[in-house]
Length: 313
Ligand code: RIB
Ligand code: CA
Image (cartoon, rainbow, N blue to C red):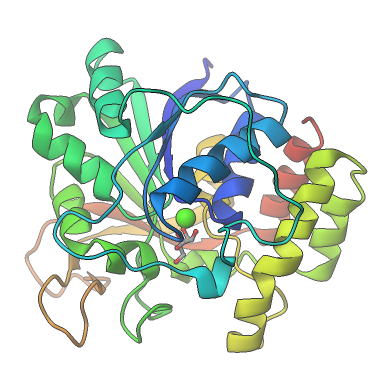
């Protein structure tokens, strides 16, 4: 089977970084056409820099990294330095990347790529707020029917919120963008907190990365040593949830995951529940199913895949 063409849209973020590494370590299954950075965990100036740092750590300075939107469609930016640190990649020693930032705006890259590639052959993989994706759909509606699938990290239902009692961060930052993407008519697979909170970076799993004895292995372990502390303190969990790599792992080994096709709506007005993803899990409304909502994974299989693929870099 030929490799799947994807664009990763991202706000690195330690977990975003591991997702990018997994994609770069899986050339048989993933043809990474480019990376578009978006404002989210930290401002755009840092997310685009961090995406380039990760590509250089992976020894892949030729990857095209584009800067996209620096703020949500209709709201001020909310960031998450309390989780990811001031750099967005706290943990390892960082450096100024020498690979250049692509000149083209990330939204234009998404539009031009979807127009240039055969229709239905490109999967979009948003790992942060959905601003770039929604902006591309607004600016060029003709590309919507050309998207093969959107596999995104975002949302929560039974697991409730992580940035507010009701909302998950990626959706909360740009709820209008999320609602528009979920109703664009593109096939959507969601990796919500319901599944990502089962992908915990236990000590044994982090040591397996460190024991790779490589630059990538050490960099990953140092990122996760820092990243997990927020969730361990908040939830008392045995490690931090490795959210974004679930998106890439799903493309490589979908059998590791299970979920249900349901209707998902986003709250865009209530101050109390802004950004909440309301999943009609039991079909009590007549709202059409618009997403495959993933609720479970084989966590040991997920981390075995991650470790095996990062060992290749
Ligand atoms: O809520 C978790 C999501 O928000 C992850 O994508 C993390 O990187 C942050 O962007
Ligand atoms: Ca992210």
